Image (cartoon, rainbow, N blue to C red):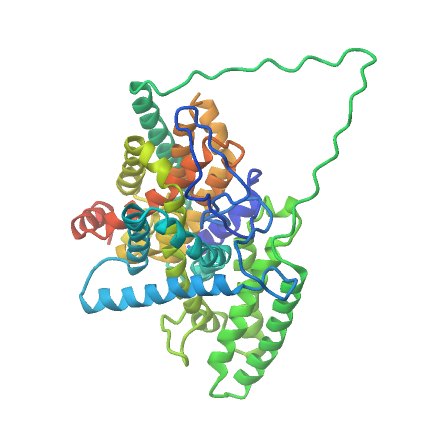
Length: 522
């Protein structure tokens, strides 16, 4: 039933993700930042990690614009600087080369994940062989990583925008069952991971008792209370100049595209691709610049998806085409200049952006090394438990009308970038997978910390790793007020996604998951 998809797509607008605030750019802790693991004295500065699920999945947070290096003559901070473009080009070229090498050698492993592992391993080995070299390369690559992760949420739009063409989940009961995967799956993954870590740390004697500070004494009569100034409102994540430029580009290319289509011009498809690309990016910037009260409820990713579908409908009405036919050109499944759609270009850029996960992983290498046992345990628990636990759940409840639907639900706790990769490997539908991932992230950001409090999990390491296991980028962003827990949430979000993707790339694991979910389906 198609209505089930529209329900999934619009549900985020009904959820108050009160802990989420958009962040316009990404930064990372300097790899030389010192962390005291005994007292958990982690210094989160203005260059905190932003995860690619921020607006997702995704990588997301609430701080003002921040860039590393680069000089530019324009006052528009959204214009990429030279060092950002060079870094982004490096990840793009590496992604293309690895894709070619993997295909020629018939390596059944996602090239984008291979890029992540290769860059991270290279940085670590360089630092070991020549101390300071890995950190220097890290600094060089960070601006490019910032640029790609800043725009990463836009690259998830194709998955959601193709929802109207996705296969039906089934009856309304099947839709409810699919939603139960979001709610119960989040609680299962977060609680099992958090309690596992808490048990390991308790056995190691590392869990400190929570000290409850007494409330401040009321002011004495006659004592003047100095009023503090209200903090300034958060900066808009994108400038007005960027907004106006994209608006003008969308209107201009849209008019040219529709005229070319009506005249059956041979360049109608490439021009439409340019129009829809500008439109997708513009609607994302538009959604991100809306009042914070609105963006707390409706994620800019949802706004961009809705805007893209509206532009598609407008194009169909003006040109006399069907909505479905125009939408099919948005993601044609080809990178040929005469056939590619805007969605194809955005999904291509997703590869280099996933490669950028190596940068936040490297920035946390000290924390990972100092807490290796619990970090690895949390990663395995969330990745293995998430995949196989979900597989058995959807089988026992007979969720969905086909194996394709069930397979699309498996990467529910994996950040959107790699959830798309996992779905492609398993043979699911990325529109369904992206919807479930976005819903899980928003639900986690809304209730995650409250659930941890209810379970009386006070240890910051356990809280962080638990949220990172289940909440993706939005859940991680919700942990930012807890400076001791936030780094661990960011670490486990990345490692869970990498581990889950690596697992499904193993033929035996892939076949086992497909076998579990396929039972009882046509």
